[in-house]
Image (cartoon, rainbow, N blue to C red; front, top):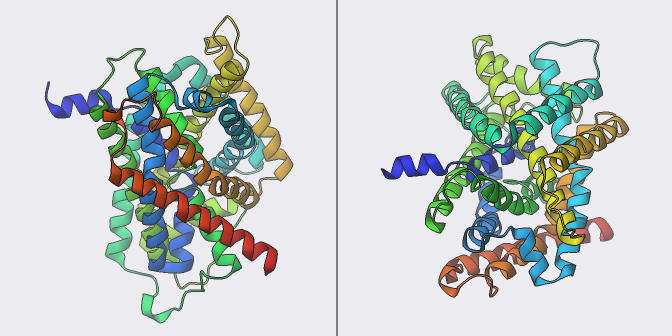
Length: 417
């Protein structure tokens, strides 16, 4: 079997990671970054992807070597580790999915020109559709469908980015002075951008759970093959973040256009700003890119949080029967849909508040979870030969220190300014 065939066979967890990551952080935050602050934003985007890489890689490494999920590793380090992660997951349950479905509902309303319906109504139907797909199709359907979705998304975004670059910036970059990023508003935006770039750090355990699920039907790959597959998915997420930033930069930067916090208004701006600048004929590429981005993210995040929740419950409250059953998975998928539908109704489709809340928590806990993941891969569970090398450990410490200092700086701004 050629290397290309082996790589294609192993595609799965890394691809799902890419699909899940290319969501709000890219479509909303990366676009806003380029639109409001210009070329400067390529620095935090690239920096966040580099500094957070070890946190996610350790999830793949630990599971590949030990055949255990990253969450089991937390329990092995001490029950306090697992309880901390459980609390973070509980908080994510009430924020992440609600934020993702809200944006997706807004895009749906805009894409199909739906009138007379609310964000909540469309979100409810999306919850129903995706819940059915996850329950009936299970992991296998998720993996196969997302191979096509991510491929279409990548091509559509590549074409869209090429079009805006060819067209040139709407206003010459040198003719506009961007607002400062080193004030309270700028720091808050960076917290959001880096908190979810490429995605929330607690998603590192999601990749390990998807790996375990894939190995139930496919031959388990080697550690080298698993890491190679994950790195491809990770590289795609970083590259597409830059694509979205460039689109925002070339179509909105310098126009003083404020992107709305309302999901429907934001969706309308995202689609129409491209067609105004490029031409109405480009609508199909932009529409497909935007909706495929958010729909696939909703599917993968919903699936992952369901699996993580069951794994945590099973480890904290063990019983004689496994909790990872078809019935329990279906039950948790439906329960998550109901909970997040109520959250959307409560927030009245204010996407800005939901995204800000979710990204803030993700940013604050990122260095802590990064440290927990490092403890797992450096523990006795992992043979010395499979532990991360010195360079990767140094990068991990740099990421932990950087994100910790940034969080402290944020609190200093909030309290003393």
